[in-house]
Figure 1 (cartoon, helix red, strand yellow):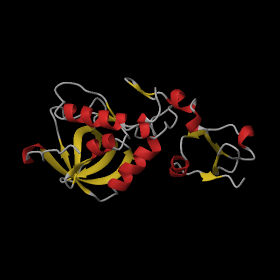
Figure 2: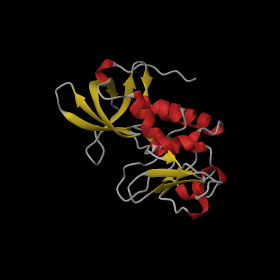
Figure 3: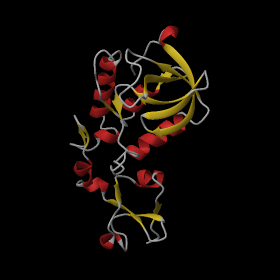
Figure 4: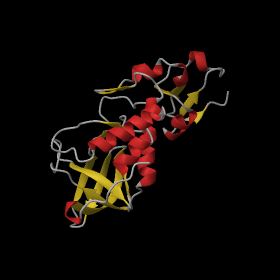
Length: 212
């Protein structure tokens, strides 16, 4: 496991987690009481809340990991690089909790790719790329399926065409979320709103298994 040197105090802003927006974006409260959105530097997780974009495979799992790791009220430290904000006005940061960094842990678990690498905000890029390569070689999560991770993001088509992502998520007229596995009584007739690679992923997205 790669170690990481703790940042200098002058590069750190203390904050408290208000809520997790998705795997790589948080809403935090700063020490002065101001609320800000924070975007993790140098990493990208599959989408779950982007307008006009379907939930991408492993996006729900990435969001769940971040929510479990940083529940509301968690004290964190925001390490800046050179740029303060992105074009949307979000703070850019490496997010520390205890002696761990969220950016690094998402990569290690195969829930994020290295992305949006722009000079001069590249302090940890070499280490991140090494961690990413290890996750890729181990075929963790987003790396389980050839072609899913691309230079531009994530290609859901590449993953839904594989045998391992045949779980169908259907929302019925009453709004209940039900998932169907191959071999189920209604599987062939179901037209899915979403597809999942694992039952765990379906359940984390709020779906329950069909009775038959």
